[in-house]
Amino acid sequence: MTKSVRVRFAPSPTGPLHIGGLRTALFNYLFAKKHGGDFLLRIEDTDQVRYVEGAEAYIMEALQWCGITYDEGVGKEGGPHAPYRQSERKAIYAEYAQLLLDKGEAYYAFDTAEELDAQRKDYEARGETFIYNWHNREKLNNSFSLSPEEVKKRIAEGVPYVVRFKMPQETLTLHDLIRGEVVVDTKLLDDKVLFKSDGMPTYHLANIVDDHLMEITHVIRGEEWLPSMALHVLMYRAFGWQAPQFAHLPLILKPAGMGNGKLSKRDGDKMGFPVFPLEWVDPITKNISKGYREGGYLPEALVNFLALLGWNPGVEQELFSVEELIALFDLEKVNKAGAHFDIEKIKWFNHQYLQKIPVTTLVEDFAPIVAEKGVKISKDKLTEIVSLIRERATFLTDLWDLAHFFFEAPTQYDAKALKKQWKDNSAEIVTQLITVIESLTDLTAHHIEAQIKDFIGQQNLGLGQVMPLIRLALVGEMKGPDVFSIIAILGREETVGRLLHLAQYPKA
Image (cartoon, rainbow, N blue to C red):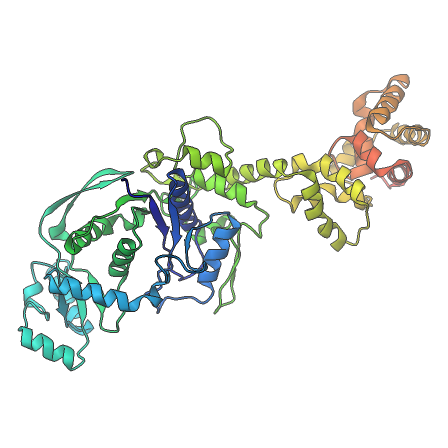
């Protein structure tokens, strides 16, 4: 029987979740659901020095906002492999570190920081790089150079030590589900520290032990972990366990034109876009980092955008529901090369998704914004306005800028437009328009359009002589939705008042 697919997202709570990490979580989620498997959330907080208060809660809230739900993990009651927070699993790691020691796959090292620093400087003086491994381990301060009795004595006396992995000497051929065959010469790798004398494991030991105990079948993680793949595969072999399959996702790169480096918060600050899903307030400095949620982005738009950042489903379609993403997702279609972040593309996605939201929902979201401005308006009238302007909106916050003239009559006009549009006969045209508006018996956009165009025809005028004047009077500038629809919403009295104000407005 084939083992059920089990994947995990295992972030460290050292700060806010970068959208690169969010994409990793998304790809794990899509892969699990595609194969009817389980998706786990594990918090890897073994590095207590870098732990940041609030980061763990932020990670869970970001996943929830994006609809990336997990089957087991931190924040969920119970679970067959609880606890899912590494700081609560300390006793487990000591047992497995001892197992590697007993099998001769690891060893005790008592080198002090000063001794290691001296070794590095000595190597540098000779133009070489210090690597702690097969070529020098027997000359350093560890259980290869010390007798078993001396090792036991030091441990009993509380002398600080670490447990290092004994890196073998071989050419290792690995397989990555995205990158294919990866060949590594292990003689160039160092003997990584797996366990510290303070009772805490390093990332490498905790990661391998937890993935094994939690029955992880596929490790889908960022490209930055590719150099650790050989060590992890060798550790599985040392334990006598079957290794999971590995897939290393391409980096999310800086926007085109800014180089090929990894997208950073500094890039976002420089170009004015977020690199975090939610707003983050640093608990120490109180500095605020922008978030997509607070910036007016919809979670569906962010998820759709991230799914296509480094993965190509092979179809022309660009807008996908989560169900469609799950059905199409395939690691073999994930690119090896990094993907440049494109802020204009995510804005496009947001615009598309905003248009899909029911108008009633938009009205409910927009109503508090209108109320904050001190405007009182019926729900029906607000629905008419939102229906008219929504196609121009990219963000919910755009709605006020697109609709403000419905609630506030312009008191002045775009100077350049007024100079261009106001002619010698404009005052007479506006006066006649007022008569037309006052005589309207039907205030539907269709009827208003018919009456005004009849007037234009009867007076032998051109549309270009009349329509810009109406738009200026109603909006204050040369933009906005259909003029006849604006009149229908504003009503006869308000429209006449705005035309009068334009006629009386001092012209340069």
